[in-house]
Amino acid sequence: MATSLASVIADVLGEVPIAVETYEGDRTGPPDARSTLVFRSPDALRRILTAPGELGLGRAYVAGDLDVEGDVFEALSVLQSRFATASVAPHDIARLVRFAGLDAVKPLAPPQEEARLHGHRHSRERDAAAIAHHYDVSNAFYRLVLGPSMTYSCAVWSSRDDTLEAAQAAKHELISRKLGLREGMRLLDIGCGWGEMVLHAARHHGVEAVGVTLSREQAEWGRKAVAEAGLADRVQIREQDYRDVRDASFDAISSIGMFEHVGLRHLDPYFRHIARLLRPEGRLLNHGISRPAARRSRTGGRPPMTPPRLRRRGFVDRYVFPDGELHEIGSVVSTIGSAGLEVRHVEDLREHYALTLRSWVSNLEAGWDEAVVEVGEPRARIWRLYMAACALGFEAGRIQVHQVLAVRNGGGRSGMPLRPHW
Image (tube, rainbow, N blue to C red; front, side):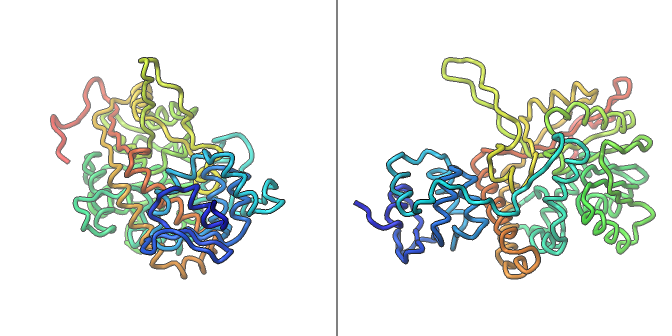
């Protein structure tokens, strides 16, 4: 019978390719393991036992009670399949409690980085707080993670040998071509981030562009980038809620990596507002993370309803994207159609997002010391954990990312090419 904590944890995990070390000084697992799960304190067990599943594991990691040395992707693939399901057998729980001590069932206060939002979900005030929680962290930190492109959404890779910057530029060009951008057109970018899409469109396609974001730090960075590029006469960055945009009609609207913040109840108003802002034959490119459709039961019945939002007890909802919601692409297409827009093209880029996330993790790990100085170790840990976990999710098909191209028909005229030219 296993008598050390390391051996008990190894028993719980089963035959896996990672090693385990504990605060007792014990180690078990393959000697050539590429990844080691390190329990630095009994508090790691307390957090896992009092919040079973990914939330407890996440809290332990953010607090520094649990660590991953080596290949974080390998460790997470094991944890996702063996530990984060909250299916640890009762007798194994009892064995872990013995090592955690008498306080094993008393929850610890969560790390202070855990989001605590107030007010009505997806109200303007709460949405602004959710955006500030994630984006108003540090522009220098994001520059370290994202690289020179300062683009926080899925890149488009023609080859795994592409640089991240080339893949992000390819994404902006793909969207520009889908939108049919050309000189003299007006573009609105909803959730413009640090402004790279509007800058690309103005530089390479001669458009006049407006970008809106709720993030103060993004808006400040974007305005500076626009001025440095000499494009202030053609590009405007606003700190503004998309619901408050009332400009005259736009020729094209892009929404890239913002859609996840809208919320199920607001999807129809979101697309209807976009339709009102588009001129006849104007195009929308909506780029957002989505979830697979629920499968039908073996008896042929209807699939069970799956909550669209990120799990309320999940790590990502608590630490990364509070109030974020993912939607099944079929329902998104239907909602776009009911809002008065015609869907013309749908593309899933999930493998591309996995490559993008792995690049971001690589950037973070390479600049780890600088990242910790900039935002503190707990927040740097949050980003490492969530980006690595999401990369595995995209690779496994548990999450997807779709670009949906739609057009506002003008009396039956779409202005679309007979065959896509992008």
